[in-house]
Image 1 (cartoon, rainbow, N blue to C red):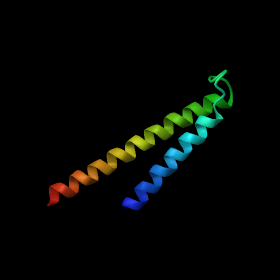
Image 2: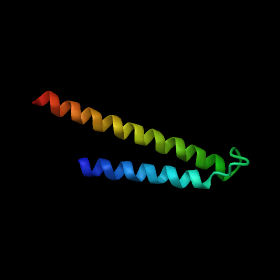
Image 3: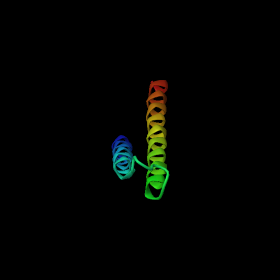
Length: 65
């Protein structure tokens, strides 16, 4: 489970970096740049949710002991 979560985190960071390179910083709200901005926010939210899941699993294992 830990390996799977880490792979998903790496994929989320990779998607975020890729989408940051696609953004046209001169006009970020037009065309593909807008889609890339949405992709950055989606990747960031997925990464945040995966971090929360990881922390909750750590808390759960400590409460079992």
